[in-house]
Length: 240
Image (tube, rainbow, N blue to C red; front, top):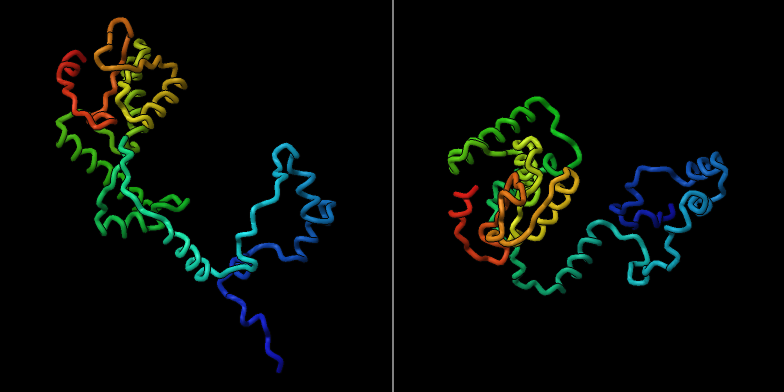
């Protein structure tokens, strides 16, 4: 019995595991559409203005398909050539310590990062209870009458806070002041949100705030500032 050379091919390649049309099925579909090849189909459907005419830089890629384990080994060797340096970017980007229980049960749990929504009643109810508990703890810690629990952090939360200030004023005060000492990414998000809501966004130093002239519904400051300064906002809070 002659040996079958295909038995020596990697069994973990994408092509072998791919569930899709085979050559015969592809030819049948092309014939039904009236095309002789996939290239002809692409020519007829993809506008010439968005096609890439330059050849792809494929010379440094493997000449044959690689299996998952072989590819991981190759990528690990490439990654090992990187020089890891300490990041001094600041502006809200900093290292954090993630407890192993959080990493394993949340960050590495596919139920949290896949496209599938946890739509089972028990999971949804548990999630709502967790948000309520978090909101209650934050309100107790800060002593504030309001606490948002389901907003994303920093930039998105700042945009939502601006929207809340605007809504509380029922649209009578159209201005909102944001200190330039806020993180750039935060300012970028609130600019977009203010533009869509018709809010006049004022940016500058907190000493330049004029509540009457600028008709403000709210003020946003950064603590500490984006460059690391610690500022006393007591006087500003009293004015607000």
